Image 1 (cartoon, rainbow, N blue to C red):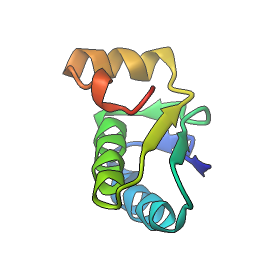
Image 2: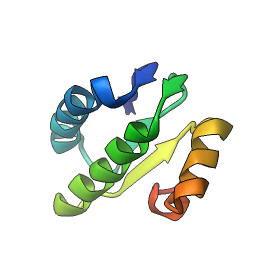
Image 3: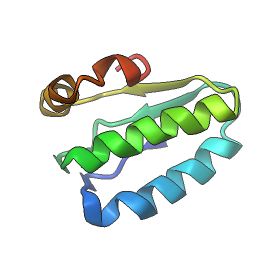
Image 4: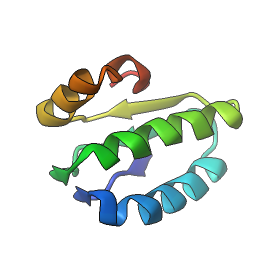
Amino acid sequence: MLQLPATLTHDQASACLRELGQALATEPGPAVLDATALISFDSSALAVLLELQRAGARLNKKVVVQGLSDRLMALAILYGVEGLLGGA
C-alpha cells in the first residue's frame, strides 16, 4: 500500500509524485493509494492522484485510491474528476 503524505500542496507535488511513482513501479499487482493521512492539500493533490492513475495505466496496473476525505472528494467533484480516481 502506498501512503499519501499529510500535506500535499503545490510545493510538495513534484517530490510526492516522483516518490510515489517510483514506488508504484515496484508495487506488485494492483496498487492501493491510501489518502487517509492527507489533511492539508490543494488541487495539486488531485493532479498527483490523476498522474498516478496514468502511470498505473502505462504499467498495466490497476490503481485504487482509498481513504479520500469528504473535502478532497468535494474538490474532485468540483473539478469533475471524481470518476477518474480509481475507486475513491
